[in-house]
Image (cartoon, rainbow, N blue to C red; front, side, top):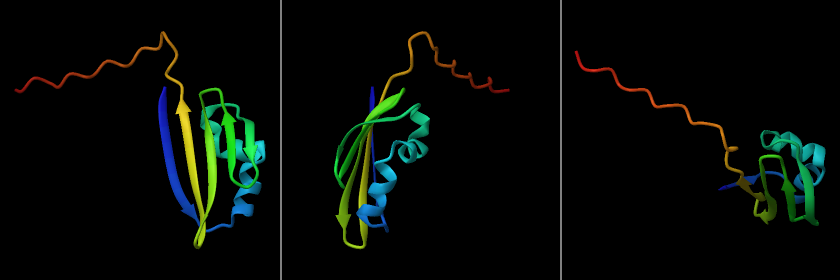
Length: 95
């Protein structure tokens, strides 16, 4: 499992971002690469915990001066067993 974190400060108010992130359809638009998304827990106006087919994590909101600090964490599941990594290409021999 790989843990990822991304942080950004957006020039939007916390209520504006909360409205976008606390609805599963809206959240899924942002996290669609992780498969079907479902919200597992919310702390009003601050945190959304989510699970997808390929990862799970949280989105945290924190008021920050001119905007809102957004922190996304994701625990990405390892590739399924049986999927092989492509072989590395060998460099051509010098002529």
